[in-house]
Length: 408
Length: 153
Image 1 (spheres, rainbow over the protein chains, first blue to last red):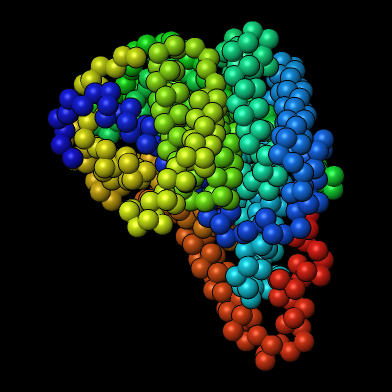
Image 2: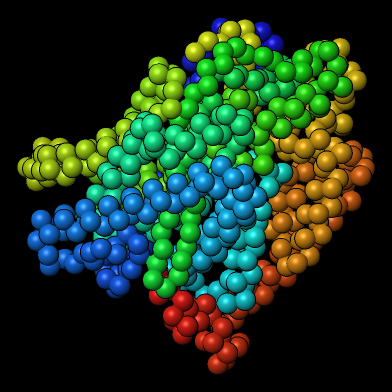
């Protein structure tokens, strides 16, 4: 706790910010892996898993691989088409300034995810572990959990830790739902979403790019489900270190609907925009007196970072130096790792490292190019590549080594 | 990407990495001439998020609302209220406007969770011997099977 600033510079603060975003991503992936391991759904009757992602083709184990691949391709195309339409709808709504509607929609979708998905996964866990809880207690706990979660998503005046935890939980629940898709569909869907993200952000007509440009031109925030890391507060001066170096945006909408019920989840995808405002200002130098602190920090907050959850900022530094990451990223990373967990833990380790490496690469590219970049492609494509390589090569190698008692 | 190194946060990484912004530490790190005016029993910020949280004037409204809504069978909201305004709870005689609501939330949460825990434990431990036939009807996994609650996915 020394007062003298150590000459650590960028590595110290940027490293810490990166840690603050890698930690929740890792926790999300870890929880999904645990859920997948505990609730073995392959053996259950999930042939009746009807969603929009399997509407074109329902995979069964008896088909040939080429058939499965074609079916999966069809499914993914349908899904990506739906996502594109919904994103354009989002752009339209944002253009007509229906921000309130979008916020309520977000709250509603998080209510559905937390209430129904959370309830069902809770029921699965109860059945697996034979927990003798009675229905009143369970309903009460679920009710509490859901309502507080919706409040955490809606309002900004909830403890930051609670909001962050609920974001991670929503990511875990949605990712678990995605892992229940058939195998080939999942992998092809991941690749398709990565490519879609690439197209939607970089192409001039891409919906995400339009959305971000709208947001920047109006200097507003898109209402979106976004995980926001804690901004770094300079303890010497009891104020928020403000860095308007980057302003990154992540957005994507995914929609999944089922035959029996429609769940519309408007989560955010990946889009990174940098607003190259250099410089760094320390706000409210406390040595000048406490009276200045409160109003100036209010002004920073009004810029919508820790603000009304209208944060669209995805990966990168918001205007207060807080890293934000869209929830769609959490979900698809976790889906990848969860699907890898359904095969073996070896693939989990490989895919986890690939995703984290992809995340780091994306941040570096962001620093390099200073413009809108999608963050999903690098991680997902690396992850899929590592999964395939692990299954094909590494497993064979490890098995041979173990069976010949060479290495365990 | 440019940052002037002297303005980057120095050594308080330990404070920040643990994600706890204890307002007392902030007071200790301030300029010495301010420490005398801000004693340890008077934290600056009423919320646990420190300068990232609410100011004192806004806090009263939120504390009151959380306390009020907690009565709709939402003890978790009371718990969140206590967690959020932890500096208020910890330091007696600070923030006199907020304190009654936060203390009320703490008491409410403890009472409610005691009742709920006693009921849940009675149910679990007592089992069929205590409840007889109705135990099977009330227990969650049977309810789930009966109404097919896990088949929605």
